Length: 84
Image (cartoon, rainbow, N blue to C red; front, side):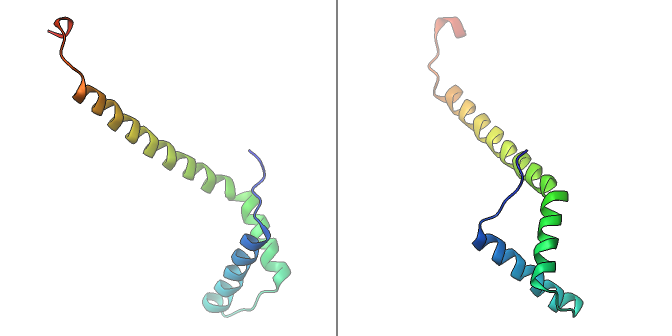
């Protein structure tokens, strides 16, 4: 799997959320560098779990849609002598 990388804008948004979490939930201010370090750490150590869950969820949705399409084909299929 390729390394998870964020655009500069995405990284800025995530880092600001990390800083806000520390301030509101832990009553601590965290430096920009520390917040970026935490983001990099979690991306490397935990990111694959979230990525794989997303793939699994997408695969399930696709399988359900394909099943629905297959059912729709059977519904519009015309009977033939062979099918009797």
